[in-house]
Length: 359
Ligand SMILES: Cc1ncc(C[n+]2csc(CCOP(=O)(O)OP(=O)(O)O)c2C)c(N)n1
Image (cartoon, rainbow, N blue to C red; front, side, top):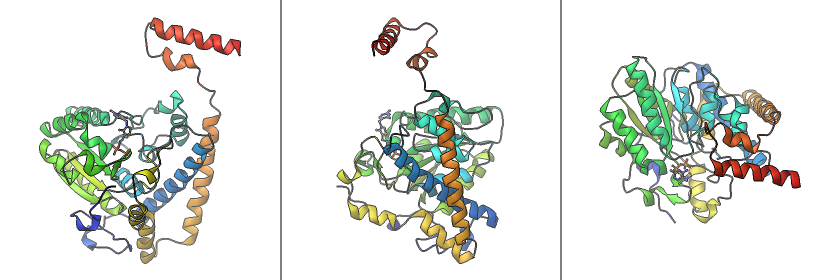
């Protein structure tokens, strides 16, 4: 069983504490009341959507699903610090950021159902399909950032990766290129403490993942990933720096996923203690941010109800729309991959068709 240093003993950027109290008012982002509220609306919507998606996966209404509860501050705070012109490269868990950045929710459900239309990101939406290959998005993100630099466009690429992903070769390769060419890249590491069942201290020897930035000659920042304002501030600073031509940043957000790794049979009880889970739940990003908004007088029961109704309706409507798509054929899975279908694959498809006829 893993032993973790309590997060509060480690050095990191934090704007509000667990009680919603501001730690240092000079750290508060310079944004409007509406913008402060929007962070709450999006985190709450995401939590409710996650609850539905978990339920629907259990009922067989969705396919692949990676729960996000606990990580909303890291996800929503980082996306909110971008402009829609900036580019997001998500991993399989980073569906909320991709959706808030313009990927239609019904397509996210089609992705979950394994339908190819899910990954056909609409023209003008600056998001790549969620990456399943751990670490591969960091190399791609360095490429996207290089394109922005070559075209002299004031845009950044933001790539998401987990703690486990920072042990992959692709992570180091992408970081190295970004560092040496001073590319407008932000790598946001959501350190949720586990790579499936492997605790972070068992898969990498460095204590602070932010230090992995040093080897690439880039700045590394550590933030409280349960504090949406800390994440927002760190990413916004990194965006400004990148757009001023001052290079890439690695941000490590300390967070926790409450649920299983994915809905495909993972049981966190086998590798995490109840105490550890309770310790992290006490830092919940939504509860603490709600307290902060209450002290400002910016959040009411009515605001809460409105988001609940909106989430319920929109998430259901998105699933209904996804369900209207005709199921994909086995042939469609392979047909667009090759100019000339390999004989083994053609053979399998013929057998598949014959099996159906026999039934
Ligand atoms: C290259 C590669 N190796 C292994 C896997 C199998 N795999 C899927 S998720 C995962 C753990 C990733 O953990 P982490 O990077 O911490 O991200 P998290 O799921 O916690 O968000 C692994 C090993 C994979 N998808 N790709």
